[in-house]
Image (cartoon, rainbow, N blue to C red):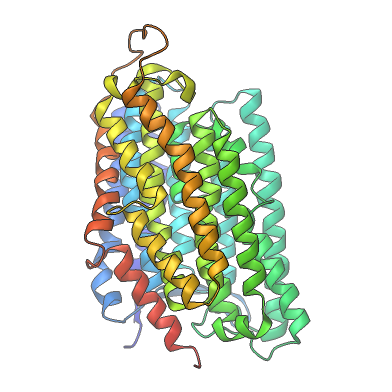
Length: 499
């Protein structure tokens, strides 16, 4: 099917950018209008993206290009199945996070809310720009803009701790950007293009050692945002940000942009056949496995709930990398579907952590004994998402881990199945005690009066994402659901592989 040349991808990006312009113009004196622009843009953006889905599902594409940045490389947007997958996830969860932000920021009377919503809108603009990028240069531009746009959100509290976390964030991610830029220069010098292709563009362009070195450069660049150890240090530090920002960082914007970049480089720049020839998949799978186990151990030692969730994210992201690295249909399917499944489960956990903090002022798990009696719906949502992270059926996490486990056997690498099972036990070790303590332990002392009563803006998003975490496991093979889209993406990739 011929691509459709259309303004629609650009409109989808500009909707949230227009909100970033309107929010500061109207928000300083009229918070209701500021929040209206946030919600209107998020819903409109999601609807525009959904409108492109039927054509994409039928095997088509949307393309928009208007500027040549390098000879043969334009500022080009292309919506394919993988673009649609990531953009749809980002847009839907932006609606949820926007609703949650309204309740959270109002109840805590946070300062600089206009700045917060402005940069929040810029973040989702750049995230969808990353999704729709047709080549490495376009992706790189949006990728670096995302780093700059998230910095004001990380330092939102403007405390010494927040400012230090912001400096660390920039040092890690700007350095990573330098690696990506270096990799792009090498790629362009070898091939004369940066265009994504489902069969890759680097085959036969240089010797194996050069291409292996190039692969490492790209993995360092994108792997920093994906928090692969030892490149993860910025992520736990960034937990000083408000909880909606933490949810955004962990579910969609930054870490998933890193994963998205890894997928694009592995399969659309190198290609599956070349990766197999170079023998780089096993070392990458090993690094991912080490990250999965070590991050789980770090999570186990954290009393602060957001920090425990942060190290859990580091571990869960490497599940995705492991699946991609094994290069089998089931493993890649498991990795890609976990991009969305992990997002729904992790954003639920962060929403719950924020709700607990808003209502009780508690941050540490050791202070949350009996919290399930005060906040039963919040802790039920937390339980669903936590069990999903552990891989319990019928949650979304079970679907991901089933395909990942089958992928290890398909690759004839049972050692990585052992890694997955070990990690599942560690997940149980750091998620089950808080759940037990919340519902079955008496508080150590008389609870204080609630600091705030959480409102519908906080409660509704965590209920929706918790229900989604179940539905994605109960009826995974539904149109527009992650599994169906992941299978379609993998079929397209495998169709380009010479078997």
